[in-house]
Amino acid sequence: MTDNNDKELSKSLIQTITESDLTKIGIDIAEISIDSILENGVLKDLPIVGSLIGIWKTGVAVNDFRFLNKMILFLKESSSLSETNRKKIIEDLEDSKYQSEVGEKLIAIIDKLETGSKAKLLGKTLTLFGNKIISKDEFWRVSFIIERLPMSDIIALKNWKNIELNSVYDIRRHLYLSVGLGWFVMNISSTGFCWQERLCEIFDEYLIE
Image 1 (spheres, rainbow, N blue to C red):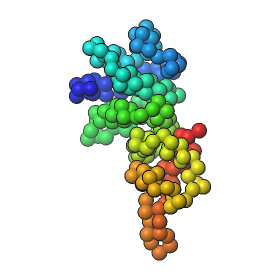
Image 2: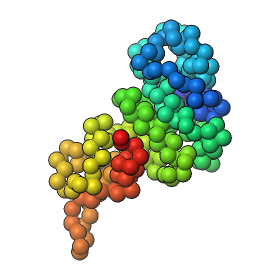
Image 3: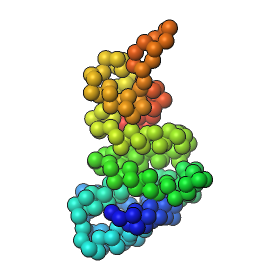
Image 4: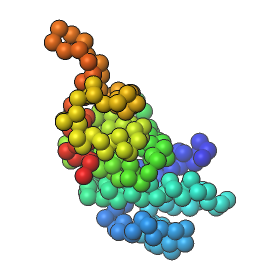
């Protein structure tokens, strides 16, 4: 996508989150096709979908269609939040110095997600922030983890309380450390790898079923 396309998608995503009735997204994602998007008013009326259709006028690539699937799953998972709440979320996520970055960040993250399951997790994370269960900083940290970790390693966090990080095999432990889910502690009382408990709890208690 070009820079102009990125800016258009960023603006339309924010408009979709803050102004659209996301509760109407009841379509089975497995049934989505190009024809159904063009014919289904509910999807076509979402600003983000309209922008994508405009970009697709020169032809639809597989990656573009995968991006739309992930976007719809993300929005559908966020639909439990009221429109008023969603407007407040965007305001709270914005940095006063970089007002336009929220949409750009979300677009970039969603584009890089490898599966629809991760898109659902990101939507759940936005809902947690909207319900004040996690902070702004935690939202972006969890989003980073969802983007970077393989899904199998995310699912493994469900059992983190029963696992010593020191005993996790090297590759997985390295991945956990690289995204901030653990660190190396060396002091009088402890030496070794320790979990970042709050982030692990967010995945365990709220995101992983």
